[in-house]
Length: 190
Image (cartoon, rainbow, N blue to C red):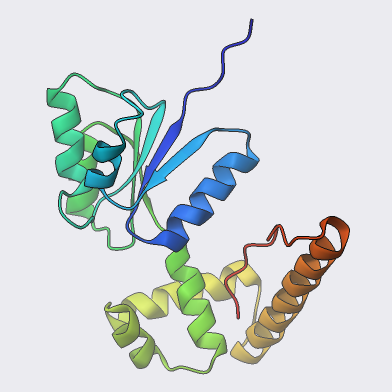
């Protein structure tokens, strides 16, 4: 008899991030449980030993790094993938020393930047919106342009319009076929 795969636990205070990660993992056939904080996970008490933990570094209440340390002291050692939108070298070194299997910066920041760029917001305003430096926004903007293959902001706007139209068409087709929208497209462009 084949054993059911163990549950992947996602702890992130951003509901959009939790939903995106949960959807991605479920599409790979993995069972997932997600929580908005360490205390919400602890209160569930359903999962004593997760197969893997996807853990945001900065959480309300107890931080992800502190929680990982607590787990290690309790003798619980699942693989941990730390995620953050505000990572730096010192933080990534701390995470690796805490036993992280991986340390990832959320790519969702690039989606946030892209949405604001195509809305016509200047770098300085985007930086203020996201509480980061203008140089960080310039770096993310350059990454978006490179990944999308856009040579200008105007071209990026046209691409975003096509993506948004395709997303809504996909949602409409899903709704007609099943009677309910399955939200198979997770684009963040509005």
